[in-house]
Image (tube, rainbow, N blue to C red; front, side):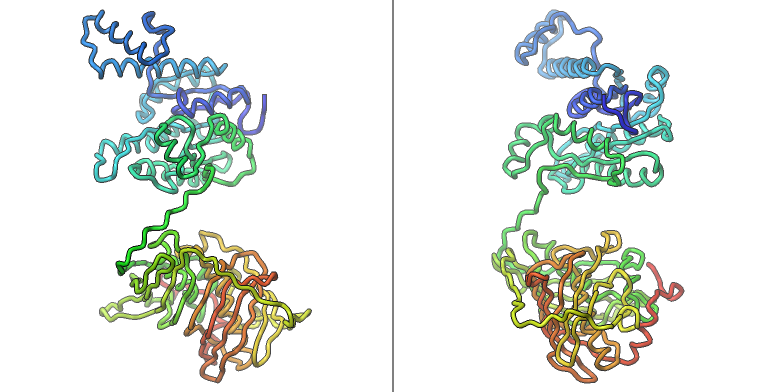
Length: 581
């Protein structure tokens, strides 16, 4: 027998839905590996002794014929509903008995787990015999697949209650401090969704969130919610299996799934509260593009607390939304409207009135997207972010034109022939001397290799910013946090040449050839197109050490201002001046 600190031969495991199906197969495997005790809960009523007339008969048609004969002998009318009900009860009873025969130390309890009082009454004598419960596997579930407009309230609660209320009932009736582990059987549909399964998706997603909460509340206990992909059996009918095969999604063999569960329980150092187990991720199919041009208006409420990254982008005591994050907001929204297409180009990007997280932060921001050109290969949007003042006056914040491409096969490289890369860097510390106001999440410029009146060269590497810290401005195909280095480089040049701070104003075009990743070295080569005390314009490319180009920015424009010098030094949020809505 295998042993570990979480599950061993002394463990007493409470299993919902453990008498039959996929969960039962997992329990049988765990019993073989660890020799622990199991309390199996299920709604199926089992027959202590099967009737003589049904014994030995396993073929469905023959068994149903015997059921009909039995009903006739009882002077009862053998209707299809009655025959099917008895047939189902016999099959379920046989399956539970088979499960129990495969496990040396197990007891089965027929009970509705959503009835907490009934569960308490049933569990008490079993726990007295087997010992305190040390682990929970919540595998119970049911389906009522219908499109949402056809679902009844009864349909919803039939699915929801087993998953959510059933789990609440389990926790209510055991001693949680005694638990070594809790495993929740969730589903991949909680992440991807599925037609007709809105209730099932919701219930499983609640289980996922439960896992995070319980891990926080009970750090002594391993808690994990497993979003299983489709299994070979259980709720996956032959028709569903065929559908998954058409999507090139392999079903999980029962033995393989059981082994995966055992391996997860053996991972004592794992920090994952939620995992998804599938052969391949589900990618949204590209929509069929029609010639019809549509317009969209999307709304977003911004808060400081929902976007931790802006605490590292503060000017004059107020958090300021980075221009590249506003661009990501627009690009992400366009991509979400057309799955299968990716951001390729931004043209004529203008920062009209930036968004500042201060007392004037709008209650709601609007993003208007208008399709102006459409083809199978490319979709072009005119885009505007705006808000209203309390008096109803519109304020325009960002304007641009976004192009999405169906397949970004275009690549570009730079040649290192004749390119002089200095072996030593300049002794400049822009994050420390007030040249830049950016704090750690945005500090990606590592070395300044060259800087003169006409050009500059930088090496960069930005550490990963967690999804939680990215808040409402997460990375999709475009990474705004690494792209922010483009304007940072220009701000450094302006400070060194004009001794002035500056902020992004315009960008003629930004072309993306590949996503600019976190945690990787890259160069930014910048050339100055024109400059004066009132306007500086530059172009730049970001590329990796192999010469592969990520981004190409043409005519980035900033306005130098000595007033910004002192504001850059005040780069901590002044909490008393900031309103978090």
